Every structure is written in C-alpha cells, then in structure tokens.
Image (cartoon, rainbow over all chains, first blue to last red; front, top):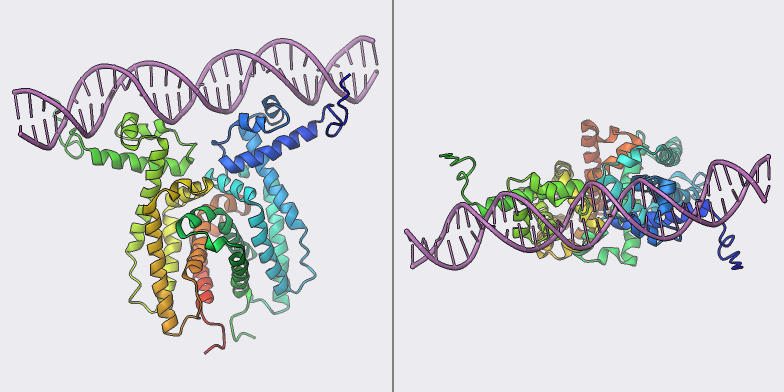
Amino acid sequence: MATTTDTERRGWTQNPDAVKQDILTVAVSEFAANGLSGTRVDTIASRTRTSKRMIYYYFGDKLGLYTRALEAAYLRVREGEATLDLDHLPPAEALAKLVSFTFDHHRNNPDFIRMVMIENIHNAEHLSASQVIRDMNVAAIDKLSRICRRGQEQGVFRDGIDPLRLHWQISALSFFNVSNRPTFSAIFGGDLFAEETQADMRRQCVDSILAIVSRPAGTP
Amino acid sequence: MATTTDTERRGWTQNPDAVKQDILTVAVSEFAANGLSGTRVDTIASRTRTSKRMIYYYFGDKLGLYTRALEAAYLRVREGEATLDLDHLPPAEALAKLVSFTFDHHRNNPDFIRMVMIENIHNAEHLSASQVIRDMNVAAIDKLSRICRRGQEQGVFRDGIDPLRLHWQISALSFFNVSNRPTFSAIFGGDLFAEETQADMRRQCVDSILAIVSRPAGTP
DNA sequence: AGCGAAATGTACTGACTGGACCATTTGATT
DNA sequence: AATCAAATGGTCCAGTCAGTACATTTCGCT
C-alpha cells in the first residue's frame, strides 16, 4: 500500500543525486547567511527534505559541506556568465557589456558575494583547496584577455593593458557595491542603492573602465 | 613583601580604564580574525591581562563587546585620517592625495577592514545601533565635499559631482584591494599584491578617480 | 580606620552542537 | 529470491562555550 510513487521525482524511491543537490542548495543559503561558524548543521538539515545523517554521509563533516557549497556557489555564478557572447562585438562595446553584466550579475547573486566575503574572512583557506574554482576563474580572465587583445590590435585600446588588473578593477566596483551595501546604507542612507541610482552608477563604472583602457588623449 | 609595585602602571592597583582598553584591543584583534560567532570569549580573556569575569562586568555580553570593538576599530582608523590636511592643496592634488592616502591606509589597517566585512555579513545590525560611527563617517564626506566644491569653483572639476558617489568609488577600490586579497591571490596568484605592483595600482586608482571628476575633453 | 561601592578572581553550569552509533530499508546483480 | 552494498533514519554523546554565583580585594570618602 501507500503507493506514494511520484510524489516528487520517483515518489519515495532513493535518489542520491537529488538529496545531495537539496543539501547543497540549502547549505549555500545558510552559509551565505550565517558564515561558517555561525551556521548550524542542524538548521541546514531541518530545511532539507532529508536528515543530518545524510549530510555527514555525503559530505563527511561541516567543513566538507562548506567547501562543496562554496564550489557550488561559484559554479552557479560562472554558469550565468558563460551565456555572455562578446567575441562578435567591437572591443569597446564588448568591454562595456561585460562590465554592465558583471555589475548586474553581482547584484543578482548576493549569496555568492557573501560566500566570497566569508571565504575571505577565512583567508581563502578552503578555496585554495579547490582546483575547480581556480580553473573557472582563470577562464574568466581569458574572456577579458581576448577583448583586450582585439582592442589593441584595432588600435582603440592603449597598449600595456593588464587583463588581470582590469578584472580586479571591474570586480572591485561590482563586488563592493553588494558586499558593503549594509554598512554603507547604515552610515549614509540607502539612496545610492535605489534602482535608478544604481543604473546611473553602473554607467559610471563602465565609463571608469573604458577610461582606463582607452588611449590617452592625443595618442594616435 | 612581593612589592610588585610598578610592574606596569601602578603595580597591581586597580585600573579600570586600562583593563577596559586591554580587553577592547584584544577583542578587536580576535573578532577581526574570527568573526562574531567564530570568536571565543574565553580566548579573548586568555589574551588579556584580566579575566573573563571582567569582560562581562564591563561589556555585559559578547554582543556588547563586539559592538564596542567595532566602534573602537572605526575610531582608530578615523583618527589616522584626521591627520590629513588637504584644504591648502589645489583641488586635484588634494583629491589625489586623499585617494593615495585611503588606499594605503586601508592596506595598513586590515583589522579594520575585516571588522567592516564581518559587520556587512551581519547586515550592519550592530553598526546601525552606533550613532558614533555614523557621525564619524559623515564627517569624512565633508572633507571630500570641500575638495569637490573648490574644484568646481576653480573650474578644474566638472559640475554635478556627487561627493558620496565619489567616496563610494574610492572606498570600493581601496577596500576591495584588502578585503578580497585572499581569494584573489588564491585564484590568480599574489603578483598583484607585491609591493611594487601595489604602488602602480594605487596610481591607477588615483587616475581613475581623477578621470571621474575632470571635465570631459573639450569642455571649457 | 573603617564603611560601602566598585573591581576582580575562581569555579561552575546549562544549553547547544558537531559528529558518531546502531539499526533498517532500498536496489542492483545474480 | 537471495545477497550485499549503498542509502537512510533516529538517537545519543562528549566537548564546547556563553554566561553566572559566590567570595574576596581594592579604594574613595569621611
């Protein structure tokens, strides 16, 4: 009896992958909200369709789960970025689009930002252990490098641009805008983060970045 | 016997203020290193010349101590900033100096940066409760406002500059440079944070900010 | 020179929390 | 249908940690 078949996927048959995914999703949300030591494994378990037992079964211990959750957060975000197709745009437009996208993308993924903040608090100890994450990000630099190279070849960008530094600057503005919003708002009020103002700030960021790569005035 | 008089201040007489200060200093360092829930009151106590009992006596509970430690961190940093005298410099130079200073100052005060990161993780709940901190920072904006006004009066800055947004941008670059150094280094290597490179990046930051305030080319 | 309040030390506890233990069910393979 | 590994559930424990009770010392004041 009790043919609960097909309650969700296949009813109440085993489904290891779904269980793992379920745990990971909740874990990202909890770790992002409460930090590593602030997060309770029991709380994660209770928000899950399974039990604490399963967390330890699949992830070993709290740190293991945290590390995997960190990877998951990076993965999701980099997936989003992969949809961007920039190679067919003129370099300046491509760069502008990349900056705009990054700015918005960070705003739309606060959990990811918070995971990175938390990982920085922990001196990136766990991220260092993850080759996966390193690879993903190095790939992100490639995208930027291609734009720079095209820009220089076409003579619209100045020479000697370091893609990594450019990435640094783009990240700084986009990241800070999300990461420090709470303290910034608490001190100066939330005006800067109103929707219209943010659109304007995004433009300002694009301009800043373009100013960096564009050749100084009067250099043919 | 045991005339331990003058071991430190007045030997072993009571010294409430020194005790409080002692606790606060250790607390800043511990909270900055481990976050709010990651910090152990016992650890703070053990690094102190006094006991856990005193922490609760003076600060009530862990949160009380954290809040005061946060204030202390802000105070120390803003004190450093107060030494800057910019009003006698030409606007562009004053701004350049302010950016350079901020960039270095943030680098030299990682504990402060970390406290702010942590507070952001906690959505600035505790900072909101501190009027002191708000006041300090609003004063920081004043300094920037004066520079902007002078720049506009003298015609070297463009019109319509928002000092708050400028502050946002200066902070973003200077803050991110410290806050995200661990993850950034873990992913891309530490080259960007070598001493020489940092000097170069500071210059790049100054240039970026100056580009924002300078009037567009061909605007008399 | 002594009294009351402030300051400090020691030892303890009650709750929380990461993790382990033991038992049971599911499912693929034979 | 028998078997064994993978998956799962429920319960408990041992260590940790914020906070407290109780007792004692110091000090300003008169």
